[in-house]
Length: 244
Image 1 (cartoon, rainbow, N blue to C red):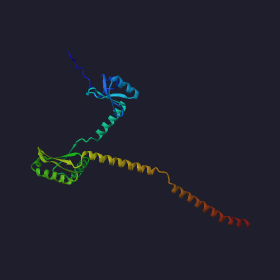
Image 2: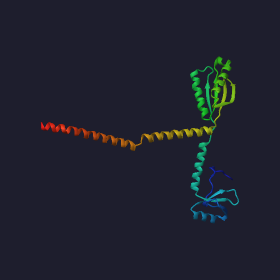
Image 3: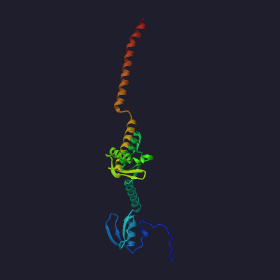
Image 4: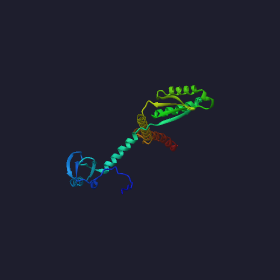
């Protein structure tokens, strides 16, 4: 009776002694085609080059294997995958809720959040919430949504027109700027700020320049000269007093 014991299926390629075929199509360290060779010969070449024999195309007949540093290959692959995830843009929909009779100050605050979201390349779902008798005045919410869309038209556009949804009215704004572009600009701005901070710190920590040192030396010499002249003037007076 067949029994499945579970466990994860390995997705890593077979290497060295894990390869169980009589012969392989071998690719050299620099990508050169060696040809079809017995597995023992391929393993011998791997030891000679101090590399690993890695099965890169198991479904081929015979399987294709390459001589490479498998540890270095795994590290570089992980770094590439990490970089790809960092640059990957995820579609995010932010939500902002307003009331039909919103206070001007609150409106400016809410609009500021919408501007920030659009600059980040995110979509924004605007929800107008009606309460009580406000439900009989849907035009108030519609005008408010149109006003907001007009105020941020340089950053976003109306992706979904205002529509009634129960007690609420909903509109979706989409950014003109793509998420990837916004992320790239944010990274550039962060790098510029970091460079500026490092430049300021370097300037504050600089030692006095050579010109400043020369100025100090000149001041010292002038002071010494003045002291010498004063001493010379006092000397005759002292001699006259002594004679008297």
